[in-house]
Length: 176
Image 1 (tube, rainbow, N blue to C red):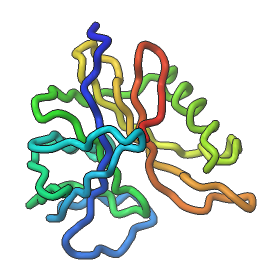
Image 2 (tube, rainbow, N blue to C red):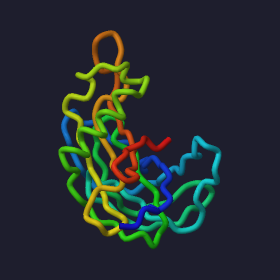
Image 3 (cartoon, helix red, strand yellow):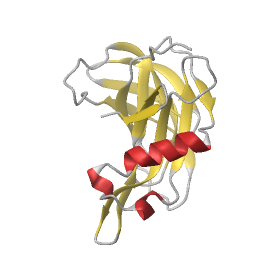
């Protein structure tokens, strides 16, 4: 197993034409662009060609970053509120979609429950969806994208969205 994973960055897909949100999973294809987010650690953002990956909808395409954005003629998106996060990886990364194990899901929930936006409330993780990919060829999840509650307050979920995580050894950490 290769312990050095591919570098990863975060992005947000914005459809060219605004779509009405859906309360249930509704995957559709749309043209649009990915906005490349600045890493929270102030490391350089990616440039050139990158793989744009969204494991929850099974998308993996290569695009070129121009002025911090990637134009895409077609991309599968989930129309639910906040389901717009994507992973950006080096363009030559071999991506294999995998199912996160029960142990992975438990470890991911343990990381997320510590995030201040979920206020340590276990029921904020009810119904959490996890999409995962393997990039080192060992058949195990290396990166994960979740969908579920991403802000808890006043005894209920305030908004839905994604968390992006990476695994190093058996430890999951949130990508910022």
